[in-house]
Length: 179
Image (cartoon, rainbow, N blue to C red; front, side, top):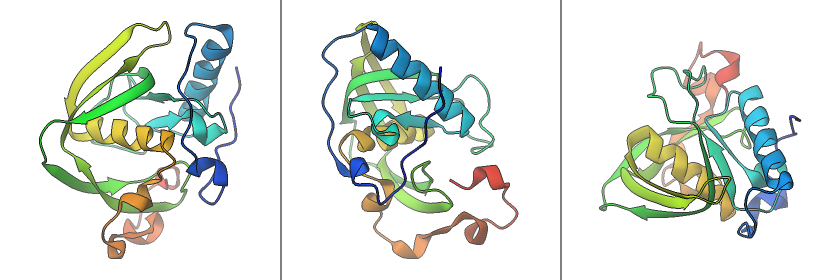
């Protein structure tokens, strides 16, 4: 359908908590999801939340059936539409790893995330989604769902000595891997 402009850090719309979806499988919701997938793929993103394109709804898309050029060597995450998500940490163990964000282009930072989570919500048709995941998959879900609460990954960081421009932190990294 359409590739949207992705809002960047500093835009106040990224700092708002958004509202849950009330009606599933509508033409408008289907169109939003198609646009989100198209926008995410065009930007080589691992995920995208509706607020990143200025839509105040609890909708995230993430994953891919092919290796993402921005995350070489990372395991594949199943392509997923997740609506009105709830994340439950399974244990208190955290992992510290590098993250980027399409709304924070050109920068990367080491962000603590729960290692293992359960996420629930609904798919486009309103059918329940319930998965237990860990590692990179868990990180991607937590990152995208943070957008629904108005949280950008730098707000989760504890050590800003591990935050910087991709080109400085990772010399030689391809230009399409900058966020």
